[in-house]
Length: 350
Image (tube, rainbow, N blue to C red; front, side, top):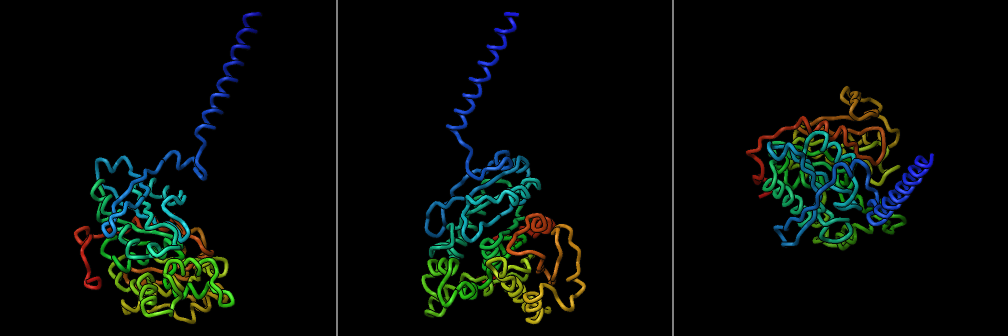
């Protein structure tokens, strides 16, 4: 009997001491804020890449699957949102890459869009290209499958990169992105006064649109609408929620207008102004085309408009300001491009 009592006391002491040790360890090394079990299982690795323009070291986060150590793997470049940076948690997008065995690259491209070096600047665009080149030099990248995607501000940058550098990617998927910065600035005025996003644009572009020819040139340089016409030979997937602009910050017309530029370049039929207005007013088309009535299970929601123009596709889905990782990566996974064209300058860029 006394032996059993001694054993119980000894066990209790061990448990107390063990719990105290565990609590002390957790206190000394607390879990990082917003760190999920998934990100703990698949930690991202920080890297720094020297900018080929201003020679500064620019950060990114990466994840490389085991398979890429012995054989080439697709590279998935995911771009952070308007108010985010490379530390932004995008776990669902990361998990899509990881479960598919894709190398994951999450560049900073000068961080939050509230200073001149960010917001689609030439420096920011070059940061993405430099980070891609770094990955090619250091890992086994399948250059026929270099995928680009982003949501919101990342959607803006995805379309912008597709327009300025269509030769550098195998395919791009943009979600709820801004295609015209001047138009978006005006959308975020209230009684003529800049609100949050308009203020951020002013910090980035230094003045409002129309202030001078130089300022207007900056707005055009950083607005995908004026460049995406270069991307007629790049598979492009453009998406927006039908209530965005009402329940979200970027009217879905930004996405349709970008598609229409490609449709005009391809000599195919654009989405009409009347159809855009019907979607805005009623959330539905009065006379939908067969392609608008498609059932796409990967989206997990109704499709209100889907049109194609050669390699470009636009989808307006039920919802607001949201990026959907599953359908984006499902579509990207089907796109393969001749790697011999990677990095070559097109006539439009000369």
